[in-house]
Image (cartoon, rainbow, N blue to C red; front, side):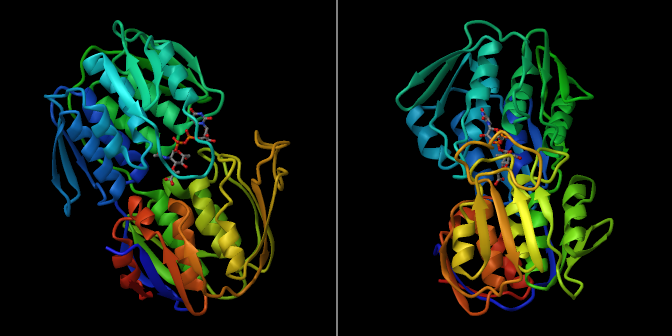
Length: 438
Ligand code: EPU
């Protein structure tokens, strides 16, 4: 299928779409299945490329994956787990960062693991130092090779007392997936507590793990010798839901996002309301709409949960180009997540990026060379342009901008969007968008 989308903008999005399980949970729950001795069943799984990548990686390691793709159910049978060939892992991993999370489970199952050089969105350096420190503290031996990392567990991994310098989502997941079968007690302070992590804890508890989440970001795990499979329905994708909400706002539209849930989106909903967006929460989903009148500028800081997610930032910035006045957005999770604003400027937006920590508390990127604050001045009419998708969320933001702009835009590289947005062109059609996949 072509990687180019022609979008005829200027039509408000109207209608209903459905979001299914969260990309950033489903992939981790799939990895957790490696830890069990029996088959796991995961429901509400979206048909996105990241799920296909993790399926491929699990299959390479001997897990039998049976998919009822349309129904969104995966069965994962780990009874024949084995070490995969290095070249195969490399070929399958593609742009994903998930392979790093295979370490703990593989060390428990096989005593060794190999991790190729990692991909992922180009939104910052994205180091894995926390992951490696954690694995070493459990007793793993890490050897750097030209093509990746070779890890060994000379004996059963041992629980440890670990503290994270920053509440990293991936590092917290690394720790959970390793500690549940390590010998003894593990205590993590400075843990990330994103809803996707809480759902991973739900899964691990179903498998037989003993995990408590204390106040002040402390997670305590009592290691057990064996785990079983799980049956679980994935929590909904709050990043996708917020992306469609921002698309509704930027195009002056009205979109019911079936499957969107309030508890995981409280910070987003507060901000959406402050900008002047309307929403109605029901048991089945959330309706997001532009109520008419001017949108209002805001001062916003991204943060770890329970703050405003970094992944909500890029789509919302497009809507902020339509707010009347100056908005300030301070990105504190990734040092380089405003690269996408350059193309928005080319479409008529007025956005300046700054190295200073604007509009909030100083963050760890202040006094360094990172353009991590943005000042958006609006409203500015957007006009069509030719743009190239830079990363997953930035790519969806370009789609929103093209939908809001007057004229025909060309959005190249839309394959990246398939990584995390299930059937997004079908959903665009359902909402009345005018576009053509060239
Ligand atoms: N960090 C380090 N060292 C590490 C790990 C992280 O310095 O070893 C830093 C990162 O560079 C970053 C910060 O810690 O500045 C936070 O990174 P985190 O580890 O929390 O992110 P992640 O686990 O790599 C996941 C999601 C991201 C999402 C972040 C934050 C997945 C597969 N990815 O990444 O999702 O932005 O948490 O919520 O779960 C996306 O979906 O588009 C996406 C990028």
